[in-house]
Image (cartoon, rainbow, N blue to C red; front, side, top):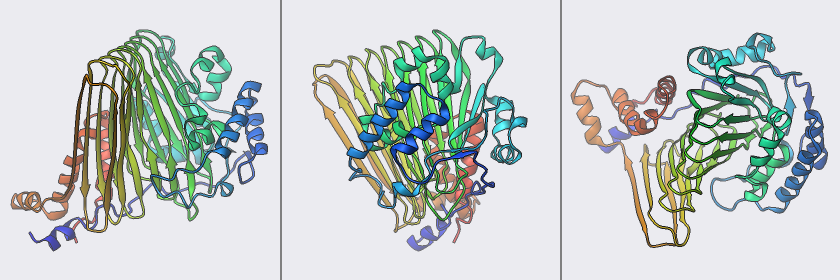
Length: 472
């Protein structure tokens, strides 16, 4: 097959087939005015009836945000105008534990997204955020009886203050970066999870984030604490309507895996292409603990996200499996970070990216090993697939190794869809579009295999939608 025909075969991959771009009429009962100010921060805190310490935390974070410069690296953020967003919109008076009690249009939205059905079929608990607040939160009764806490972050603050304050902002402090500071100032929603010692949450918990209001910025904050020897799999999904004006999503996720615990955090990010997605996700793994990030980035205008594990205790293990799809007008700046602070710790970062129609995908990662450590192992693998001549793939790995007793592996590869692969599949009677789909599906298979079956099916379906019309 000629180079021209190869390019024609993949011409439709990544075309906009976004089916979640619908929106419902806005009916916020509380909505701050546009722009960021101390008045807005105080209004958010008052709407939540927060303790004084939290308001002080927010106001200090606002000052930190104002002092920190915009990042001069990563995705193009020049289109962000912090004065042109709404920072808080509350859609309902009270959170519900029943879908039937939600306003009809909100319930219809989640039905279209398939969340209630997923809850009935294979989830142990669901939290659903609509604009700035969790409107639905529920966990199975048998999980509750084991002492598992799964609630919105505000309820965690009010009802479990001692546990909450012990870990809140301990892994991602406001001064960590400009967008962590912004989140700390105006955070709203998210989940608080606690799993007691030795308890295995063998059915996933899920949070789903939906932006409905035009020009809204969403700032959920999630705190997960998994006690000694316990396990949880937490899944996060997100979508938004397509508007002419941009939206902003700046979430923070903090995970604390105590000795011997295991945490898996899976994300299927599918924001519409008018959303800036600037997220800080970080875990602290104590001795013998394992933290796994499974990170799929399909949508958004620009994403900057680098899930991180601080390997703080001997024998801790961290993994990041990141896959990004950058189509027309998209910039996916993703990767992972591993910070080794103890002996005999190990980590794996696997990054895969697909670029199409001028999309830009970048791997950005860090492996850092503190001085005088022994028995540290780390492996980094970056694999990029470029589907046309207009698209771009970048790799920015950083290795900061300050000791000698380390086994470090790093592998990077950039490729196009092979003419030989297409020819082979077509010689078996498979048409060009289907052949291209199969090759891309094989490329993302390492991530798909790590997801529960239902989500693997959904991800494959999304990729299929992205690839409709692949034959030129």
